[in-house]
Length: 243
Ligand SMILES: O=C(O)CCC(=O)C(=O)O
Image (cartoon, protein in one colour):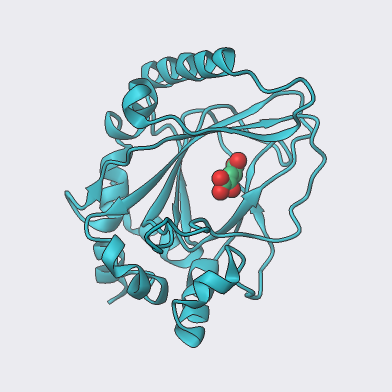
């Protein structure tokens, strides 16, 4: 469970990192599953920076277990409410291959382009498991722009939720200074869907590995327009705390 300080931190910054959320066993099994994915479909020799795999969750049980068989699930539900989250069908394995001397010029939010039925790919929260240590900056770390979950909601209140389509993942908001997420393998990042983020550079000597889950609250999809304008719609615990 997140404590009150962590709830406050999430409300204010739009993300929180929970150290040691994943046990060594789960981590070791998941690392082997990533090894197998990479061995089966290795990146070309000249690939630098991001290289993603999007397996179906059922085909990678040991990756799915990082979220569903660890404390990560109940930690995430301590933001949204007990038994509120839906198990997702897909997992993202995100490599960041050095040398990649990149600095993101701006942010994005996920979910563009929309699905064939016209619905944007919004969700409630991003749960990210660090699969390699990222103790220094520019080691392939995810970049985030703290507080932009609120700025984005203000943007959608002003321009309407359908502004999502024109923005194409890049709503033109004012950005604060970015932060690079740092931590050790086994740490858990929980980030609000509306938090600006992007792929960072990697000038370390190691491939950065992370596993991301895009998690929805039950009933999220039909309420995506309200959610873009009310960042706490899916988050009972944060709403209660703020009230
Ligand atoms: O590789 C990362 O850490 C970031 C990936 C990302 O920004 C995304 O998939 O939306």
